[in-house]
Image (cartoon, rainbow, N blue to C red; front, side):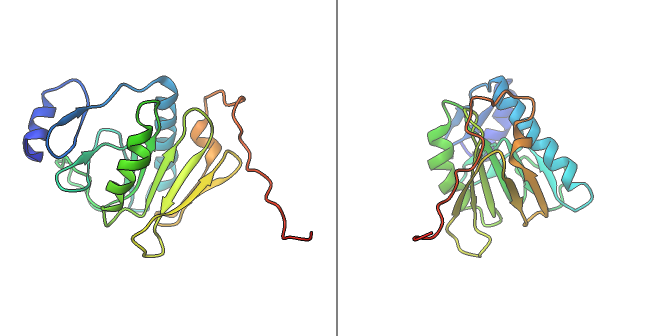
Length: 193
């Protein structure tokens, strides 16, 4: 199946699929925690991006990665003009994936490599659902390799490539996170202090 055949085929389906470059791959349904976090991501981005030329989207718009592969991140940002007729989002700058119990390997290994192959993508954010935390990969330094940072609830996700900062806790609004470790651990001082 080609990418174009996939788009034609997928439009006639009620279920959601990604395209692995050869065949459709069914996407599992999200639980409520996943859905709330994805909605919070979109809302936080939309409120902050109004009027700056960048646009949040997801999860129903595609990103072309390696070869003919098409992924559907839970959230993404493009700063390129859109006509509205496309199936693929042009020049994605930031992508968010909300981890589900079945998607961890795919989001943490396969998609890291695939998103690194997208020249315009400067940041990839993996959002935990079992606890409050983000794994943030960026390549703002111009290097092709990702720099990895982890963030917890009392920290802020800074995205200078789109001019936006979002408190991590805001992505978890509406959820009971009382059982999670929500603060950054104390870092030891220099030796001898």
